Image (cartoon, rainbow, N blue to C red; front, top):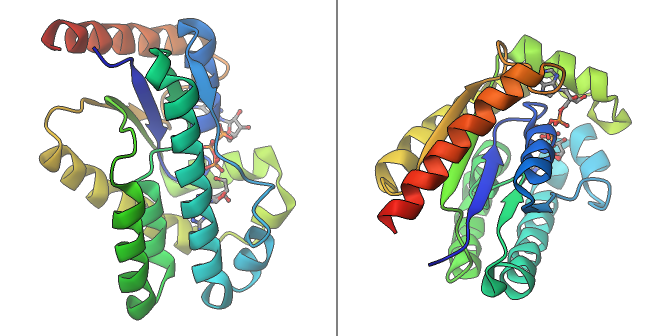
Length: 212
Ligand SMILES: Nc1ncnc2c1ncn2[C@@H]1O[C@H](COP(=O)(O)OP(=O)(O)OP(=O)(O)O)[C@@H](O)[C@H]1O
Ligand SMILES: Nc1nc(=O)c2ncn([C@H]3C[C@H](O)[C@@H](CO)O3)c2[nH]1
């Protein structure tokens, strides 16, 4: 039986890292975190998206490729469960938003070559929240280079996430998706909200284990 591999997803500031950390602490799963500061293009990207989109998306893609290879070799292969604050598919969601169509076509080909054979999560937690909530949380976190993120960019990103998740669910009926309303659920400050999510995750993992 393959070990559990949970991916937490949602648009910028939805709470992915916060929730993935809390789940990692509770279940004692290895925490795989996405890189942010290490991306040399991200600052320039937010200043001029058209100019830097391809480099930014390629950096995220190749870096995540290495991260997934590493967790396969060091954790999953040894039956050690993992929770990550991203799913590889987010590359496609961002790329659809930021790349010109000719670049997107090239990118999608490279994505499909690179992702072949990589480990795939057996459960996805999708946090959605409205643009006001996302903007507040991005401001709360206070990364300097994210100050220029516009409400319109977040709105488009959130819409692409919604469409993508619906399609993903249709294409992967065997991967359960737990949806969390990030506007109404405060898993950072409210222990009851967090426990309620932990109960749902426990239930879904147990059900998956019975079916495997
Ligand atoms: N449900 C929530 N209730 C209250 N505060 C939250 C909630 N989710 C996240 N926050 C706060 O919002 C900020 C952003 O959260 P976090 O960094 O976990 O988001 P993220 O989805 O990982 O962001 P990014 O996409 O940029 O990596 C943090 O300060 C966090 O404490
Ligand atoms: N363009 C682009 N493509 C990605 O695949 C991607 N993944 C994350 N990010 C941005 C969002 C936060 O600012 C910050 C942390 O999530 O990095 C991305 N930006």
